[in-house]
Length: 242
Image (cartoon, rainbow, N blue to C red; front, side):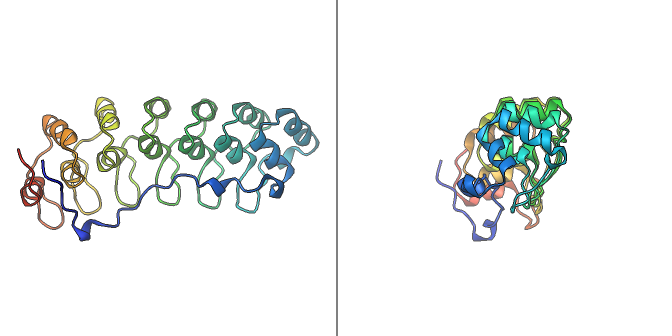
């Protein structure tokens, strides 16, 4: 198979963001509660909250609660403690990101599981309208994606590019996640914001194994995007060999 030529008009699909190393700044700059939360200091945190219970959802300069920092730092004990003090499970930081999304981005499965078991909403979107399931797919975590679906995550949620988790998996060439989502009932006929089907995305991103899988699932090679092109036409123009 020849390499696909990437059309310049296709450039610009928003990449999902991973938490930057700077998300947790110098701990000395954090408020005491936040510093204890991201360091895993359960007892220190308990003492602080016992003295000032209404501080459980206090914000640092970036709009982060102690729960955000506990989740990205992988501190399930702290997450459980904050829940005991009735923290807001669905609080958003300045990037409109929930603690659950931060846990998923950081592959902290235990933190994500505790949040879900206590009622965190898996369908809240961040600033790019990406849900926790989008990030689980991006990070190729079948276990976290399974957790999310068990707690009623919307398998057809769309982000700003109209990408469902399934379309995202195809675009990012995550074959295992594509198969996982198909097995869990994802709509294989979904299209993005310019009417590109999963098959068109797979052809464009040079994913022959996914192309084969989609054809087996009955995705039409003839459906057209907003330019009037089909997957078959893109494949032919870019030198795909049958």
